[in-house]
Image (cartoon, rainbow, N blue to C red):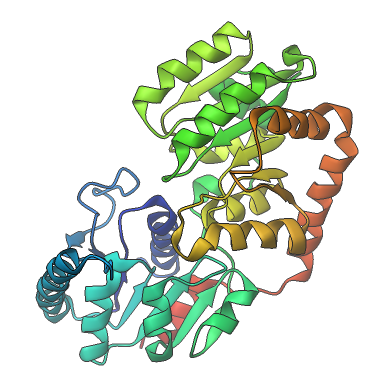
Length: 368
């Protein structure tokens, strides 16, 4: 029998990256397996390589309960998406559908349920999204990265390793090669800064102001900064030039693993992907959760990393200003480096003690 897996995913990086990681691992296990992606937002996603895997764009809609007109339009889009998904499923005939959350996947997952096709869900956040909360009781299992998420989901849950693409897996890549890639100095502390696919502008502004108030020697510091959009790059570069900080500024970087490989500290949001990658490379973090994340899940993610793992400091965006951020960076990189080393050890200890399963192995075992 031909093995077929349909991956339901939306176009945001936090969902696309683990979905692609799963697809690649499944192909490694069985090169003859057929894979296709389906969901909303794939046509325009900068994170999804449309040449790597076949895919189908599916209409979808979110549900703002306080906006009845938008709600009605969304219902219409979901209905269209279900019709599209039904056609995709009839033609592709998947053995299993793996969903990566968000409203982008709802039509595909609802159709799979109606067609009695087994569903597996991936939940990367400490607070599960609404689609996963709705469908978890119908899934074979939901793979979770934060143990506390199990208490918020109906149905079976399994703690899994975060699916990471090979380019963001810790390996034997030489640090010197990564520094050369960014044209940076091996003698300086390297600060990695990015705001993810949401909320990058506030991080950009806060970070540039912070280094203007840095209480230590800026000549000991260098920055890798991903701004999230091209328009911000020139402004951020000019600022670092003005204060004479060595830097590499880009809007986006596909080889993000090279940045993690040389980072001594990261400043960023508290998305599930950021935390998974910081843990993988054991990089201490200053986390500033995105205030407008659904169900405040980034704050819960950050609290886990800070309080359970011990690998991060967490600050609400409203309670940290440029001067305070500058002080925290100075403390961790120059004044009290042992604190940073302790955070690295805490991350290593956490990984050594937790028992998590591989999502690709679990999915492969479900395919007849």
